[in-house]
Length: 247
Ligand SMILES: Nc1ncnc2c1ncn2[C@@H]1O[C@H](COP(=O)(O)OP(=O)(O)OP(=O)(O)O)[C@@H](O)[C@H]1O
Ligand SMILES: [Mg+2]
Image (cartoon, rainbow, N blue to C red; front, side, top):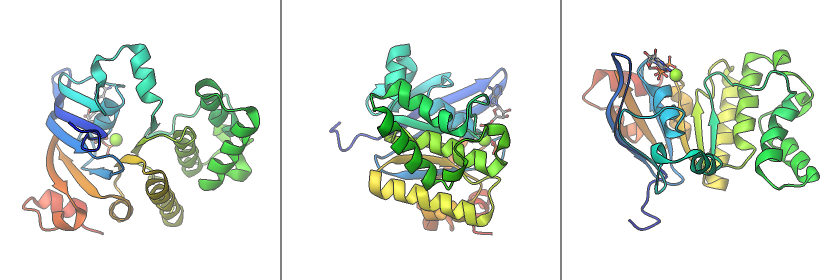
C-alpha cells in the first residue's frame, strides 16, 4: 500500500466479547488520514469499546486493529507508548488526575513526553486552555470544575500534545448548546489547520453533522451503515434514519 493510501486507523473484522456477551461483531472500518468519522448508535451498542480498541486499552478477540502500518494488538509496551504518543484520547468521563490542578494535568504529559522547555510548555498550556475556554481556571482542582468544564479540560489534555489522531468519546455530553457548538468549532479548526484524524463518538447529531465527513452507525455491535450524513438519511434501516436525523 502506498503511504497516502494507507488508512490512519483500520478495524479489520474485529470482534469483542466480555464473558458471554458479544459486544462487537465482525466490524471493519477504515478511517482515512485527516478524516473525521462520527460513530453513532444507541446506548450500550459498543461505541466506547470500539474507541478503546483503537488505542489498545482493550484487545480484540479476533480481527486486527491497524494504526498506520502497525498492528497495535501485537505491539510491546514500548511500541504501544510510541503509537499512543501520536494519539489523543478523551474518555467518556474526562479522567483528570484529581490531585493535580488543571494546569498541572496539562503540564504532566508535556514534561513527561516532550522535550519542550518550561516557557514553551507554559505557552502551550495557555493556548490550549484558551481554545477550550478555560484560561481563567488553570489553578483549579478537578473537583472545583463543573461537568462541562471537566469535559473541556479533558479535551484540552487530549490536544496538548498536538496528536495526529484524536479519539473522542462524547465531546458535548453535559454541555449547553452554545458551549457544545464552541467545542465543535474547535474540532473543525483542529481538522482544517492540523489535518488531525478524528474518531468521535457522539449522541449530538447536529454537532456530528457539522464536524464529520462520514458517519459510522453501530447497532448491537455490528456496523450497519457507513457513509456521508446526507446519504444515510435515506438508508433502508429505520434505526439509521432515526439516528442521523436532526431532532
Ligand atoms: N470492561 C468491560 N467489561 C465488561 N463489559 C463491558 C466492558 N466495557 C463495556 N462493556 C459492555 O459492553 C457493552 C458496550 O459498552 P460501550 O461502553 O461500548 O457502550 P456505548 O455504545 O459506548 O454506550 P453509551 O452510548 O451508553 O456510552 C455494554 O453492554 C457494556 O456493559
Ligand atoms: Mg459510551
